View 1: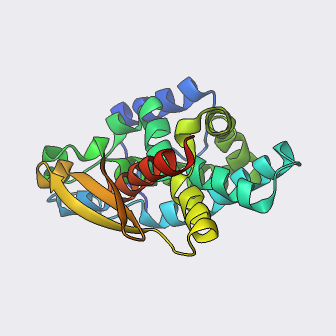
View 2: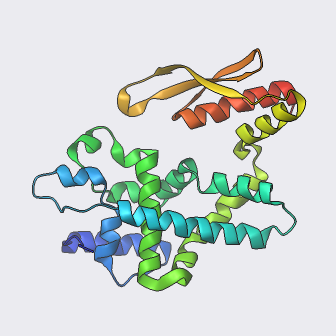
Length: 239
């Protein structure tokens, strides 16, 4: 695996990132690669590598560590409950917030276009970078070290999901309700969208039979669908 050459200034930044989290790594060059977005290769003279392969590996490690944690933590919950909790805590929305709290945005290496469009604050870029960092811990110290890093933030997010109704998976909840009560599945459509291309807000509606709920907004279509599903759930189930 080709790795970027890093300056002394960059080395200090990476060490600070690790020390603030209470971790260490033997390969800072590999950690630096985790912050290289694919757009960075378009910069003349830039290192021709990105974090996509690391993100692929880190995504799998994150899923396994998280699944094992909630499996052990909640022996009373069934498979459906466990799946819903995991789907939220490993979601782009949650991971991007964790990444921001870790200061990942300040360490990202992006192409000029992404820099100008605020790429270091985009959910997908931040979430992918965090997954790439997880892969670095796995490659540097194995499953045990990767688990230690993931468990430095996942339990907190799991607790939020369990205790906070705002993290409910309303799409799954309303689908199960609609199928049980009306023998139909909800359908989602985009009503309209607002904002510039790099900062869209999507307004989605949820249709159940001949009734429409929404529109509700989100920074992605999925978020908008969840918000519309919540409206449907609230109106139909009074919860």
